[in-house]
Image (spheres, rainbow, N blue to C red):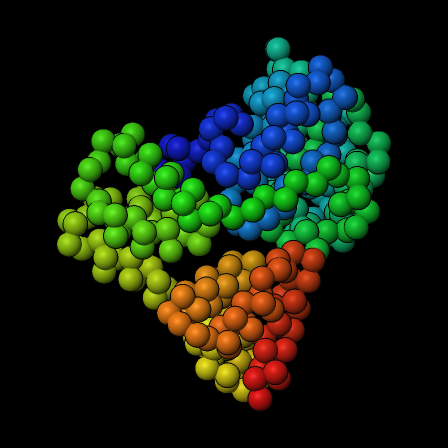
Length: 308
């Protein structure tokens, strides 16, 4: 089984990082009842939103087929929303199950008609039904949907937390043939994403030690477009040049690009005085959750104009 699945947290105490979110969720489930019927987990890809939602599902006493998980990127139409509305009227039917839980991953991708139909479900939710929504782009959600949810902001992990996770997993796997330098390179590739860190380690863990570094370099090369964008912004390239780079990139997850850019710029600043890197960092330091692709584009444009 892949490492990122084998070592997925099973309860709140196993979750690494996001202490504020975990603390809030623990506090909620110290109550005997009166839990929020809609929770929204928003944040970067691979940082634990869906994992936390599944732990919440367990805390709600939902068992077996009373838990319905939907990938909204593949099931985004009105029919999906109608199935939810029709199904939520039924009581839990699995023996011992206390609730029915619907988890919608990448919920921002549902269509407008589906969002409006789903809004009806949130407005009139039965006592036994709970909705757990996960998104990397909450700005695309209807404001009326967001306002009906208790929102949890899931953050990327700090480098030290990723590093501690990797060493712990290696200990569990009884693997002692990975150097400190390789671990630090994996941490850099992960950019705060525990899933990406474990996927990367899984790819190299069976390799000879002398092949690991080159394999990690190949992973870095896989995101050449983002590297080219960083170099262009740092090199004070014209907007015309940067605009062409953006057109070649997959901008569907601007948060991933933003984290890569600020990581690159922070590394440049550590090399010495770099006012340009500091300026780029300043314009990329805040998440693009609400502005998405447009926010990323305008940040790049602003930097190009100021650099002329």
